[in-house]
Length: 221
Image 1 (spheres, helix red, strand yellow):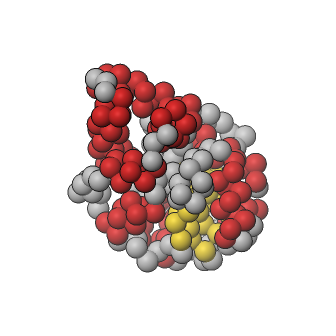
Image 2 (cartoon, helix red, strand yellow; image 1 turned 90 degrees about the horizontal axis):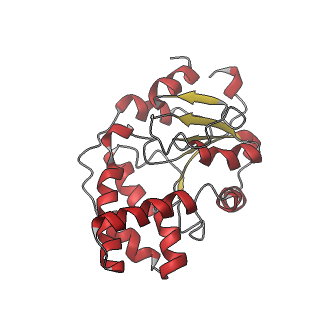
Image 3 (cartoon, one colour; image 1 turned 135 degrees about the horizontal axis):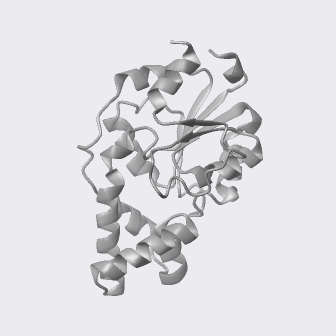
């Protein structure tokens, strides 16, 4: 274990585009489902649905947050619908499985998705037994990252010391509250336009392209 990570006892991971490559584009499938949901809800065409969807995502952190605020959308109905996708695009990375298993201390998932979807993804990735818990959008009272409240809930509910924690995330703006709490931060830069929003060295300790080689380096492999 590298000396600069010896103090870490809680390893916190985002899910989508962090534990699997962004090129799998599960969000592309979820985007389609969200568009369908919004078209049905608002009675609009696909172009308008996409405008609404992306506007809510940028303004509120998730499309769901905007729909809940403006249309009183039931979060479980929405999440069940949009996460009903095929996971054939992702596969297990056995090196990643081994590197995560070797991390000392606690291992957790912190996602703007829900636990049921996260569990399906983890199972497909061979990581069902790798994490102690999933802190999801329900646990955050439907207030998504990067709102600081979800990070505070994560630490308070699960007894996490942020100064002894590290957070891996593909959305740079979602690292701002983590850094403010004292977490070590790792930006998994997948090159996406959304991921680059608010990318700044002030709140990013490490910038990487792929998770597996970075964890291998931490272990000295």
